[in-house]
Length: 316
Image 1 (cartoon, rainbow, N blue to C red):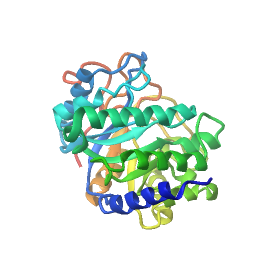
Image 2 (image 1 turned 60 degrees about the vertical axis):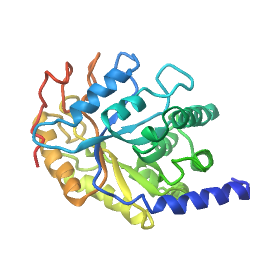
Image 3 (image 1 turned 120 degrees about the horizontal axis):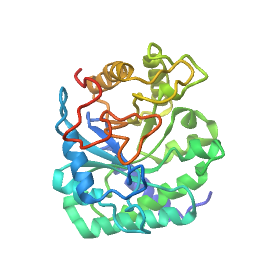
Image 4 (image 1 turned 180 degrees about the horizontal axis):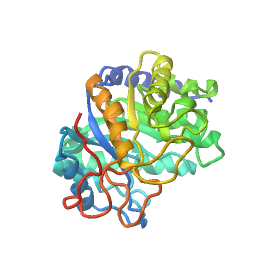
């Protein structure tokens, strides 16, 4: 795909500046969706409640970051997601996400919301941003025949985001993309790596049904994918943007959901990543609320987050 030389110049300049701040720094956080299982949009108070609970977990500390999938409030076209003022109120850092699959309008609307957030909240917002993810598993879904986008379109979206943040307080924030390791390994997708500052690795041994994926094999499965991603990243940082083990749901090949196995996975994976200082956004704090997730990866069951207890020990 052809790009105007001026756009490429802006992108190259932004990429150079952002690479300085892209290194892993031991960030710890969770993934936060824009809506509950009943499709009701989360409001500012809901996000604040979740962010504050994450900051006060038994047996662990420092979970003060949120990864978002979209800049847009659920159910609106371009309104800024209410997670932004919630993060400001709770001093929660942000790995922003822009949802780019579905239509050409998706990236336009996401950029409109991003610009609106910068204008509306200023440095109170921009000072909290630790990264920007353009898309989430789009390459994986595209290859699977689901709603995603291919590498050329993704590169175009990345370029649009870099142009949008040029000259703003977010200009030096590292821009990346989140996907599965096999998507990054696909030769047709590797051009994307040249256009980002960091790679987001989503790793779920639970879903790797064609390989040995029992909880006893989970450490090997996870780090096999993570290390392959590191090897093809051309020296760029790799963040762990999603991982976890379900406490309930169907058995997938040899992977059995249970609180006991989720505890083992936390101790093996979360604790080793924390020890290594890798930026980590776990999946997730509470998945079942106003409905039952299947499978359910939530540390907490459904209910009031300040009343229910974690399903497993979070100490390392």
